[in-house]
Amino acid sequence: MIAELVSSALGLALYLNTLSADFCYDDSRAIKTNQDLLPETPWTHIFYNDFWGTLLTHSGSHKSYRPLCTLSFRLNHAIGGLNPWSYHLVNVLLHAAVTGLFTSFSKALLGDGCWTFLAGLMFASHPIHTEAVAGIVGRADVGASLFFLLSLLCYMKHCSTRGSSARTWGWFLGTGLCAGCSMLWKEQGLTVLAVSAVYDVFVFHRLKVRDVFPTIYKRKNLSLFLSISLLTFWGTSLLGARLYWMGNKPPSFSNSDNPAADSDSLLARTLTFLYLPTKNLWLLLCPDTLSFDWSMDAVPLLKTVCDWRNLHTVAFYALLLLAYYGLKSPRGDRECNGKFAANGKQNANGHSCLSDAEYRNSEIKPSFASKVENGIKNTASQRTQLPSTENIVVLSLSLLIIPFVPATNLFFYVGFVIAERVLYIPSMGFCLLITVGARALYVKVQKRFLKSLIFYATATLIVFYGLKTAIRNGDWQNEEMLYRSGIKVNPAKAWGNLGNVLKSQSKISEAESAYRNALYYRSNMADMLYNLGLLLQENSRFAEALHYYKLAIGSRPTLASAYLNTGIILMNQGKTEEARRTFLKCSEIPDENLKDPHAHKSSVTSCLYNLGKLYHEQGHYEVRPEPCCPPFPWF
Image (cartoon, rainbow, N blue to C red; front, top):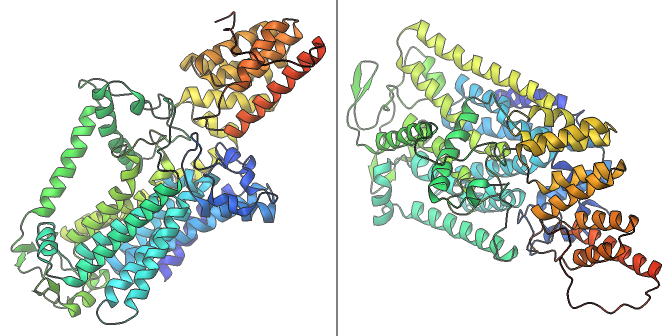
């Protein structure tokens, strides 16, 4: 319990400086402008709309169905309104709770000792969590992680009581309910059922990779077969229900969100998608360069086999292949501190499958042999032994890889290239893997100096992670600091968003410079072209404003707000016929496949109002609708 409390306290302490932070980036759309949070909106709308307040079946919906997270935002809004302090407090408390649960989970694998403590501290301090904890919308990942771990811990209880207590099915019910809640916080949460199956097979039953399929195929262990079947059934049911509820249609994303998915080159798509897991793993291992957004050209496409980054890809998958064959290969007698042991009494890393406390004792008690009869492990052995390093590695890899699979673009395209908050759950597997590796080295080396070096190197890594987290939290204090920190990684997006912030601060010349910097890196950004035109219009530079509005419409013909402001300028300049055609064209734009249909409808309504005003000024009180509108003279 001490390890859990200390690691939770560290997770809490490292993020206390976020309590004074403002709303940043996606927080505005998910909270400040989300109608589902308002008291006058029926709370049941949360279960029909996506995370951003758009009807889930709408063609422009993001399809991110996270009603429990949105409900938590609504409760925050009911208690504290739009005071960001309370929202950040909930995020920090959730992270502390997740850290404590992860430490408890690690204790079941590593024993009640220093290595469990180090695993908990590493998770508490890892900088990759900053976006999920310091960014309020990251609560979806943190909340999903909370129920992810609760589901996994319930399944571990189910395994330990299976066949000996009627409560075992109560624990299984808890597994299913928590998995469902995790999915309703964020889609990733459903993957806990697959991780639970891996735990049952490789940790509880201590099967080797080579023995899995023969055991299941021959149904040697009916209880294992039944549990895995029920996990599969429940996971398939939840996934099917979610797909049905969102209209059985995948979301659509712009090419700037995921350039690789929009690429016409099969080679570029393949090389880039194979490289992205390597980049994500590097962010976990060395989170030196972090960004609030990795879209657009933040990660340039790998277009040829000559790109040097392909070497990283080859090394990454070669390492995975070696790990697979290393785990799959048969193992007979094994060496342990210069002596050999057989029949699984000691593991492949040179030490027995005992707790950390037993490692430190001068007298190591004999371990129980793992007896297998008809595919069923000896129960007494399971209760007295901790899992072998080999089996913990398998579980760690599954915890690292399986929750990340939905973000790989292998089965469906996603709306991002890299998203740091998506790595919140996979980082559990990473922290566990690093700790297990350090423990294996610590046990294997003989010299006390090397043992101390390994232990203190791991502790030093945790210290550096904690320092990086505290520093990175400072970038999330407000939007200006956040966007300035992202210029190095994603200059187009960072400069454009920074321009909006500077404009709100009445720093007109700096805002204009920021917009132009954004367009320098990516000239076809419709939003930036529109924002620059709006800035120029507000400063009476109408000719320049018209130019940028026309460029914005050319880049995105469905941008209703650009038509609206173009028509207003033309109307004020006395070009009534051009203004009339512009307003009519705007009124005909459908809201299909638009990310923000509410803003679109607002712009269309304003266009219709101005069109009516124009007709009124011309004395046209009854106007027959025209069959079609001729193209604009400037196209």
